[in-house]
Image (cartoon, rainbow over all chains, first blue to last red; front, side, top):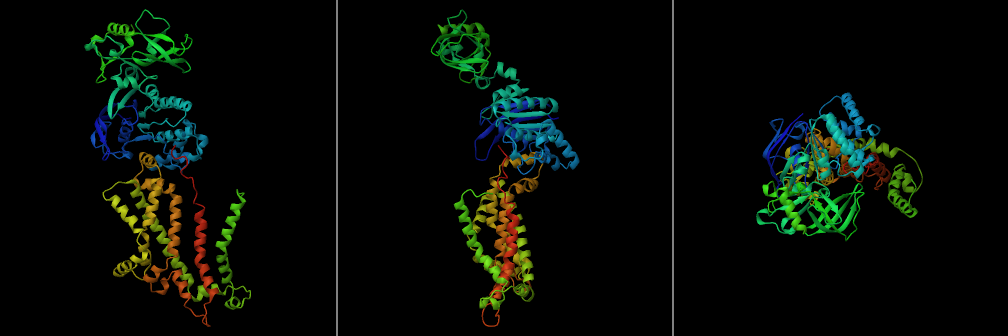
Length: 359
Length: 269
């Protein structure tokens, strides 16, 4: 069991730019944390600092309240799963799983029993004598998990563990990882660039961009009350629509804000509805299975709307109206991108803006 | 295995015959008496081997060669592997400069270092000893360079996985890097062994005592021995040559089985 505290962690690589600009985080014991962000945002660097694979010279890293900046990886009681699995190619599955125990001088009988248990849990028993080269991608992924699990570490670091799997396997493994977390009760820090993984797995999500922590909160809060325009746009598929009030027309100076709303907050109308709506022209329709995504051109630019199946679908080029429930609109500062919780962006005013824009 | 291309098989066969025939011829010759050889008769005798081993002390030379080449190979590989690991994986002050120096040694012909090495060992009192034969050969710049390149090709994630598993740097080297680099290390070992086995000039310079002669020195000495009528006893020389090549041949056959490819398969996606 371990809690991890990061205090103002900074990192720059030799003669390179700074990759982390003062990241602070409190990770609770047994929490499942997902760090998400675009490529190059510093999320993997942060994980490597936690693991001890890269030296942490600026800021403070506490594991269970003790300073761990200078602890070598083997003294941190942390297991890590690598993006490319990093299985030992010359060892069998059993040896791969038991290697960590062997290094910790666990007696042979005990470590083999333990490795077999882990393999059983991960349904790897039929492959124990195979080498990684003879396994499929999914099986290799399981071996990588097994290697981390065998040691009973209190903390697991996972660096995009599912990114090399095909989609169906990825969804299945996602559930398994979640299950595993429940069983093990270990602290998990999971890095991904996949926002679906982030929202579905995490107790709390840390969104990063350019080495800065943007927001660190539960998936609900991250999704409904994003701290800024970046977080709002990064999480959610299809992405949130943004319209500047100016583009919609008639927004007065103090109310110069950017309005964001999720595609599923829009409802489709074939004729001008009573409620505030944006007039748009259908440019493209995409079928996702359970719903359609409409890509429309509006005065505020390209926007997306999600239309459940069964509704009458417009064809490309059709004139439509997208009605917005004002309570679901978010306002952002157009310069800083910070979400505004100002009284002047009350639902009524949003409604007024949208109505004017649509007119 | 069926040959995929008969033309290629024919080519391989021709090359094989071309390369093997002198070897086979010399082995055949080693079983002839000098008499039979010079008169063109056919004969079979082991007397040349008896003479080489008994009269000319080739058993001792063989032992010396095995000791010297074996130790040069084992110690040289150990040194080169550790140096290669350090050069491939660590950044340390002067590291690049040191590696440059190692590479630079590849460009210096061994004859240039012959006299400095001789003087150094003479000062250390190591001439006419096994150490004198072995020490100059164990730092092998080429082996360090070659293995470094190979180790750099091994994903660093494997090292890191081992560190996360609780390994020390030495354990990473020994348990992860060395097994993966085994084909390269064995090839290098074979190369070092053969080079040292065939080394003539250094043992000639460093050793004066007959009981420290290596096979090559002993072999060269046979040319100076007059069989009686002022001609070289070729069957005897061929018997001694056979004694010289046999261990290398056996070593190659043994090592070759381990030179398997594709060991990296499945390590990383």
